[in-house]
Image 1 (cartoon, one colour):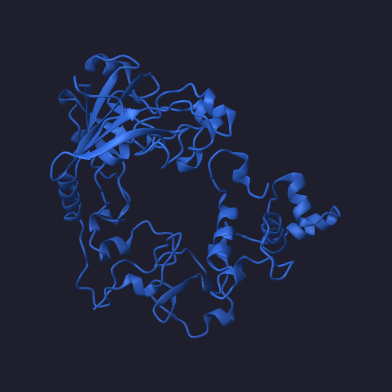
Image 2: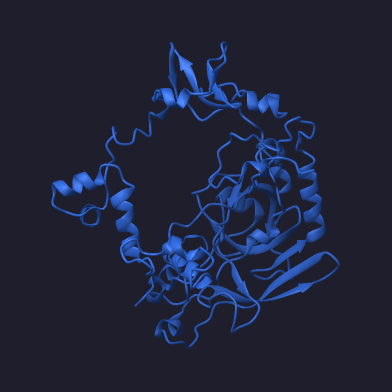
Length: 405
């Protein structure tokens, strides 16, 4: 067995194995300069192995680990295989006190100090702050201080949020009328047995969790007139989906929830996502902007090299709710606002489990409405579209933060 996914049906890759293999397939002879970053540091020119990958990390990237391993006459890899974890000594990596680190003379070369704020800057970029006559690294903010008041929020057009406070979101209780059948839908909670798209081909996990019913409180179920297992129609701004009810005291009144990592679908029996976890559907356009998805067949046993595929006992694989959510870009951060205001009612006579109906024109209208809530700073002399100092997991080059032309 060469790859982890070979222990499961389908082809669900472990991430570290995936990137190594992908890089070698893209650049098999190394001529593109990609493969070299995924070659073994111990066997020059050979593909990096997973054990070698972690061996190198433990030998070079975990402060204090090599010394601790040597005291037990173990290699760093053997140490981690034995204990599974290692506490980095504070003196080796004071990650929780970086703000208290004093800047060295070489780091202060070519800097200037603002007399009023104490901010230390080089070429307009803050690198530290003076406190009681000493130069410290400080926090990763514009002022290098822990900010209670955010000058950035004011500068970028949101002065009312410069101080911490409670913000009424689009699903605040004041925006939801329960008498009209409106609810707050939480579509982001997860069943603990599944992991996004990666668990769809994991047969044992899907055997445990293979449906995503709509959770609702008994008071709301009584108001709507449904019991556990009955069909519900959940309507958003742009369409609706039909799913089963799960009546439980585990959710508060006025709130409904639907787990987000189920409802996979395919258009053909022999292709598309794995048959362990997907329904066969018909997807059709009903007008210029409306689309309907209807399940033709749920999950069924099937013959394969794995005898367990013939033992499938579940028949429903969940409902694909995400298609019914319009794009809600947060006006400040740009991140998608997942929570939805919905209406919930008993399924209608022609509704079927798994139905999804969407109006793409309405979706675009909602998107435009949210864009109108933004406050673009188009007249900034520095040409910035967003603050340079704000941290992102994968930060692009500084030029992408500026308007072009």
